[in-house]
Image (cartoon, rainbow, N blue to C red; front, side, top):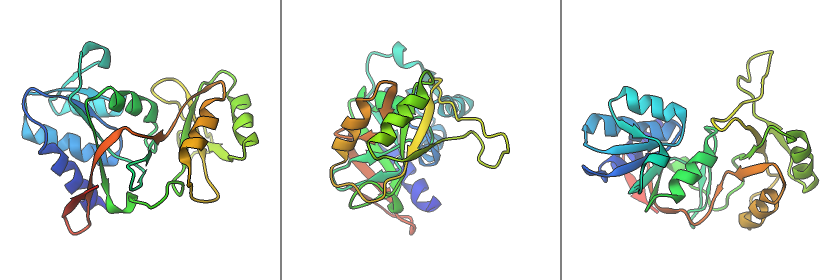
Length: 224
């Protein structure tokens, strides 16, 4: 799995050229891409989707700008929790899916990088993160569960006795939904949940990813 992540990240880095403005995703696979950029020592500008990615990029010497400081973004490279043949995604395992979606949709192109275990026929095996405002979050959860979607609040440290709720970089909470079956129409699920007041966004990504580089455990890659 780690080999697949690494080769996918490194392959994506070969697409980056001097002068580009590049969006940096969040998560373990995106970190391989960021490290590959650091190693290439290109003259580029970057925009990070999380404080964690920003910290790593800056430490490696990359020029990181706030998203509101740039006028365009050439492409964003990011990982995913699941990707289907239509390049529909479930993202948010790293807790940054709202910022990742803003960054990706603001870019001329999004390239997904993942190991082959993330490729599925139908979305829904992975948990779906839902970012929810702290104000009234209990009521938002009740309304989500009334739709038939059962979830649990993400906590900062699952091993700790004092399980404080995980807080996103936006200052919100995350409810992780677990589906009882795979989804044939994920767009409908997204629309229903997004209509609930207090919901910021779901981890579904539709019509955003243009290319996907998938890494195999044998060190090779393929595109979808």
